[in-house]
Image 1 (cartoon, one colour):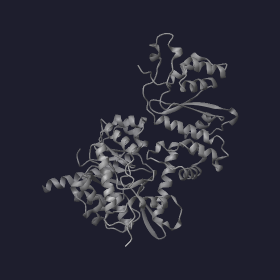
Image 2 (cartoon, each protein chain N blue to C red):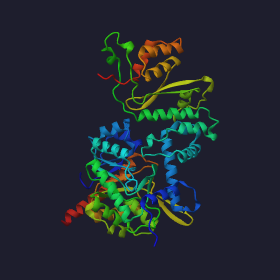
Image 3 (tube, helix red, strand yellow):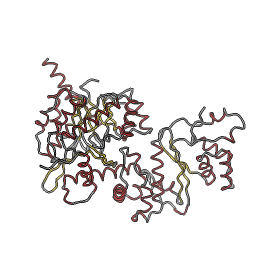
Image 4 (cartoon, each protein chain N blue to C red):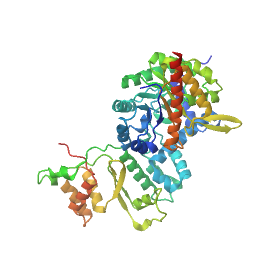
Length: 280
Length: 246
């Protein structure tokens, strides 16, 4: 697929409208975990495959689990990927399962050599099961894990180098993490290899004030903020255009609002494409 | 220098902090605590929309959080999470004022399960017409995936309809009595139809693998008004049975 395309996260409230109206979009994203049953929603996505490229974005593989991947869940995700043949497959640098309990959250990892070996092994097992490379996304950070010996971008870069996976950069997550942990987003980007970056994500976040402290919460519940647009532009300038998705998961707006955000992203990608062409 | 905890132990300790309520854990951990509890409550609200409509968002959130604390998910497909919620509600002290609530949760759960079932091929009148005469009586039919019977002492079908977002504001008379609802996976959604007492016995017997003849006998034994040809035609019309293997 072309690099300078943008699309949206396809969520249940918009499924029927997309199927009916088939608006132009470079890419549609579904969450793997919502399409592992034989529902009418899966039948709709199968119909849409002729008109759209898909990204299958998993949220529950728990790539950071020391327990390893859940064999049954891995098999179901692999069957879905085989069936839908998406353009992109991804999950997060996080864990959500421990001791057989699923937490439905993207929990933080200590960025250590041991954790790196665990994630590399899990990503390789995933890639072997799918027969293809996957992208791993930077999560939103709320707490710095004291045991960490590597920075997050250094951990991601090394993960990509050792496992052969690509990286999915979520500009909103970088913005949220940098704010919450007191990091500089520009320096955060410094350690990343451009050739490993396969995809960008954009989303909104909430701004919470508690005890005189401002904490940003990655809730995918509002328009992309100005600061995140600026950081996205910086990512595109540094790494070049990549397929980009706008995600909105709570207080989901009208489809037109979502598509406006995707078009804004696509304009930005096209401008960088044109600039690069002039420079070449 | 202390040896760092191995990752598995570190994650187990983090998980224990996450589900505990120790105040010293810090407000940053509280963000994750809040997300785990609220996102599971939201997932349960998607699966049990009628229960939520009946009790209201605040009551539902509290009940769902209490349920999730005692019966957390073990895998990430949340459409498959909540099998024990109806039993939990039946024993949930704050819900005792709504005696039909647990049955409504069973109906929501069955509708959710049907929606997430395979449509597969269904037995139709045409499929039956190719059977040799005389074969029908001894036939054992399989219920199609997602088919379930939900029974209640209360008219949960009327309560369900009255709880839909666009329903007129009318009271349901609980004295109207029992409901026997057959939940179905249809082509594009899940739905239910109300059965009479004989039809319900008939479906249960067929679901247990008994022949048409034996199931009809059981139905007639419990309901003198049972009419086999009418009941069978109705069920075929609802596409309740899986297509027969050739």
